[in-house]
Amino acid sequence: MAKVVCVLYDDPVDGYPTAYARDGLPKLENYPGGQTLPTPKAIDFQPGVLLGSVSGELGLRKFLESQGHSLVVTSDKDGPDSVFERELVDADIVISQPFWPAYLTAERIGKASKLKLAITAGIGSDHVDLQAAMDHGITVAEVTYCNSISVSEHVVMMILSLARNYIPSYQWVMKGGWNIADCVARSYDIEGMEIGTVGAGRIGTAVLRRLKPFDVRLHYTDRHRLPDSLEKELGARFHQTAAEMVPICDVVTINAPLHPETENLFDEAMIASMKRGAYLVNTARGKICNRDAVARALASGQLAGYAGDVWFPQPAPKDHPWRSMPHHGMTPHISGSSLSAQARYAAGTREILECWFEGKPIREEYLIVASGKLAGAGAHSYSAGDATSGSEEAARFKS
Ligand code: NDP
Image 1 (cartoon, rainbow, N blue to C red):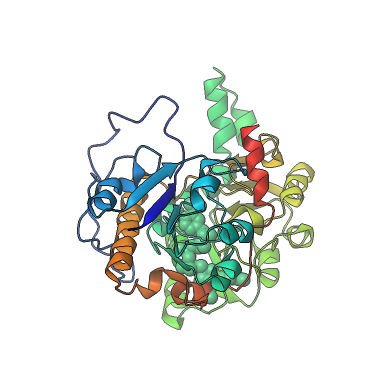
Image 2 (image 1 turned 60 degrees about the horizontal axis):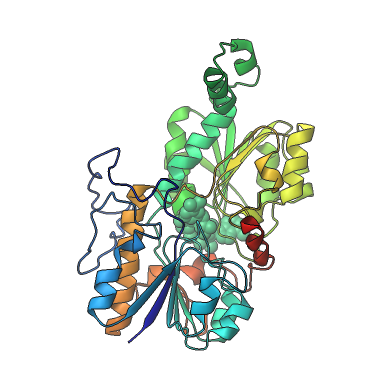
């Protein structure tokens, strides 16, 4: 019987919800392109309820305990005295979400001698030292596509809110003001702008599709070029590298995984090569952008705005410069954890667990690491190595 340790974010400060803003979720058949939604044999939750926080338990307790497995759920994940670090020692399976990542560093993997499976209830397994997972024969799987569309909607929202100066204008209303000139002195239409995505996978392509009707000029860079027909349909121009693409763009959105190739890609030099007054939207991973270079570029006016929901580490310490830099539109890591997305990644996590316990293969598109090497989606989109260094800083949030 397996011991499953699941790290989830805290419940709402006012307690686990007893009522919701809407009565249900729209029913979707497939993801764009035809990939099927998660296919567990059953689910023990109502789609649309809060599953990603501790009391939601990803809807897994009944399923696991009815089969004799044990489930530990905690939000206490950072530092050597954390519940996660204590429970990890004899865990067979760890489940974590990128929003509140349980960093599985080489050191922690070294202590977890029974660990065989690390599931990301979401997309992006960079909180796991993938090299260490390969070395220790740990399978890493994520719920590919579960929240890609959720994030693409968020990206479009953030591009528009930065360019149109939405957040400061909202704040004038809240202050009881009516200061139109203050609101519009930094407000632009995106029509006619050059907008580029770094990464044109599931999220990047969905962002391009959603932006096309705004009559903007679209660009992308990716390790693999999109099919000709799709490039034509989107009217998107391919660039071999991010360095080649960004000087042309008024807006850059980052939609590539964090791995050794993309870590610190947006450093001082890359940001300096952008147009003065460009907007940068990063919902991929905080470490892809250099923390201090972003803050400096906003202060100097090199960037007109920066938005996103990803930080490093997470949770971000209270003195993280992105909390207080000018002209930002940051949120905590939420874009992939809408109630809609939660229903999909909870079901996908259950699907992965069902396969694992029954000895059936996990879908190729969910695999990141298997049999000691990058596999499935991981072999396509990641490079080998580790992107967790510095994650121990997350413990500072508590202090
Ligand atoms: P996909 O795997 O579908 O797309 C990622 C794309 O990035 C792939 O096309 C990949 O290329 C490309 N890529 C990889 N390395 C590079 C590089 N060096 N330069 C340019 N492109 C590169 O994943 P998704 O679109 O679903 O998700 C992308 C990322 O977004 C996730 O890895 C995760 O980090 C983040 N994310 C954030 C969420 C949030 O809540 N904020 C939620 C979900 C995801 P190829 O495969 O062609 O080699």
